[in-house]
Length: 186
Length: 432
Image (cartoon, rainbow over all chains, first blue to last red):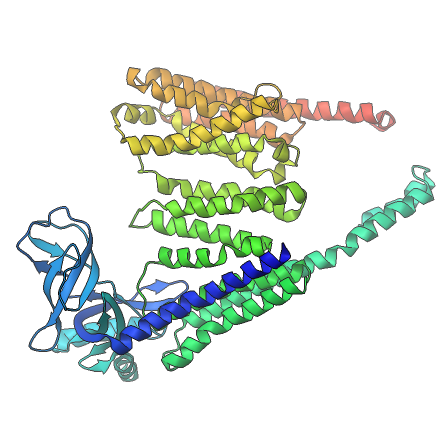
């Protein structure tokens, strides 16, 4: 009985190690082999009791006009991507089921649709930041966007429907560096 | 050994109440009991230490060390987990004492949370807080049985309650179905604990925590209508009847969270149901079949326990608290015929419950239960003054009467206790 318990205990320990290891492997694989896209966004700062402070990213890309009626649809939506002339991500097509196209796609959640426009929330909307920088990130980006034409975007790697948010940039400057400069000035 | 007892022993020997031999036996008994104490204290401090250091690691991780390279952070993510696993393996394989097992298991549970936190943070992995908690709980739930750790049970119970609240009470308002499975996961361990270590501290603590968790969570399974009142009434009925099982009833009341929470909850819910608005709304409400089924579940479970108590002849005499949920359930099914009869009968039911509590209090010579019964009646009267147009003189007289009731019943109980004390020890009559 004790031998069985020991084996079971080691199986659980292995699972405890494997789950985060698998998470890391999957994310690293996307970062290395995935295609990168830039999504225009605006950050706000909430807190998670265990994972720390993060900024929530409100993406400009949150709806798409289609030919079919999406009224009352609620669930996953497959968002197929392309890029515009400036290199920012834009939607090429959307679907309720996966399509047989060789294009990058993201699985987003869709709620409260009406008519032929489909609304969706991109899943990579959390960016964890240092506890002293998250709030200033929100303030600095808001100030920058109000005063100038600075663009805030999230750099996202996409592969096989899964996406990893690598970093957030303000006019090609990583947000951490941008906040550092903002804090030095204030 | 208790200093009071230590001082009393020579006096008792001198007064020839006990022999010196008996005094020696008493001393030896308490000394043996005290020897077990340091170990218990060591366990408590060990668990507290593990809990604090585990939470400390989580907080340090939550700071987010953005100056550190990603690879290094990833390696650090596994540090607390591996330390927790090594400590648990050591205490399990070497069959170390309770203090080791409990401390290492508590640390391991928190370390799992810390590792997932850090991984999510490094890669900005999306997901709600409830999803994060669910993964954490699933990865640590087997430790309860494998390491036989009581502190893990408590942490598990807290985490599943938090998970259900986060999912059910926040803006998403989803029903936390996984909670039911994760709660059921604890039951076999809890039953074993109750059978093997009935009088242990942990069994007593779990007798409170276990019923408290579904009380907190039940609201997430309701859609907020009047049925939620009934659902809670069913749950409190279930808890009260569970508290009547010999396993719990034979324990001190302070160790029987089922009876206390069941009784308090039943009284509170019934007090709300004595207002007319509940029954007026009930006539207008309409429900889906799913809502009705969900509401029926605690009712049915309470009914099953009640039938079991009767079949096994564990019910001595009639106790209205055990049946209150059935009476209100039956009244609710007649709400199509109007509300007046339901309002009147619920008021009578609450008043009768108060009287029952007074009777139980006198029977058990318990001031707490006696005054609890009086409090039920007082609150009922106070509630009726909100929705009735009785004049001030009448209200004043009723309050004076209830006040006198408090005084006389407590006096009667005091007299009864004195009478019993005199019968047990007639000598004290001379001193009275």
